Length: 372
Image 1: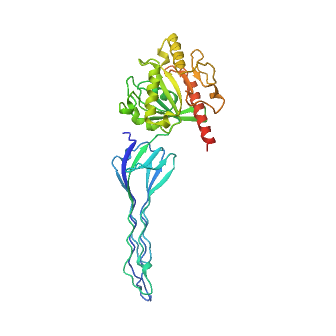
Image 2: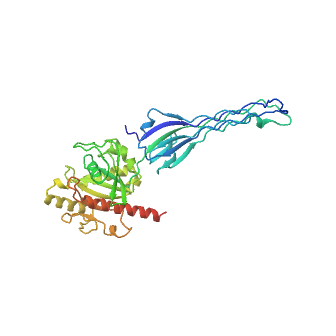
Image 3: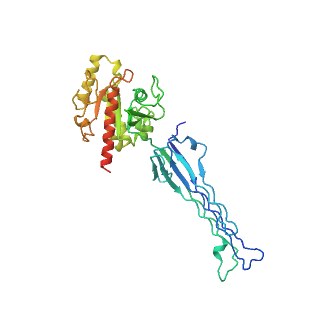
């Protein structure tokens, strides 16, 4: 079961109590208090782990407690401190206060960790309370209590490119062709019920991560369908690939405008991401109709077809790509990076699509480095 949001309670460990003890040994004069301190309670630590992918392991463990510290002992021996309770979470986990909604931590990279709650300190033993006027103290401190907090964990997957489209538009087929992901593929809507990540390799040394989410339909922001619930999983991405179905009964303009509107309602940040458009199922549209539909769509976006690029798109079909896209960091984010017809079934323009998307992702990475 895929769980990407869960509410739990966490409690750090209580400190161990100090010890009341006195030194009593034969032939040892002036024996006195020697009670040791209690051990520290265990901390609550969240750690990002690449081997964890969802929150299913919290299903039967909604209150997580760290161990308490051990009591102090005689002979000035300190009680054993409790180990930290390390809770593994997948990359992209946000920890929020369940009441205020405040983001307490954002764990993105493998190995990232945060101590959310400190364990209670151990109590002092009676040896700390001896004085000239009180040479036989008979009391020690109790350990400090641990802390408790109700939190909500939200998972936002980390990807370079997010796929956005209507149900059954070919998103799962595309990610299965270009990456190592193996999503369920079938000829009916809402085949994808959970987000999927796939690594797209470019040559031997370069790659990027692509995310597939359930299809979006008109009115998704009002609760229809599944896709809007999972848009948070591509909220971190800098690039969206809108997938528009050439063989759909819906007009191409209607599809892209509906998708953009639903994304915009969900997040202004996501709506202002760089984007490209893939026109899918080019293999089942007659060649003459295909050329006419693609040209008309490009022109409807206020653009002009261009058949010159470094990505080896099919020269027999019209497509659009920003002129500066291949040569510099400058590009117009208000326009699509490219518009190209593709077919995952026949492989038409798939390799060129991979390299064009990587070029855009790589550009985003360079911009991020420049901005610090």
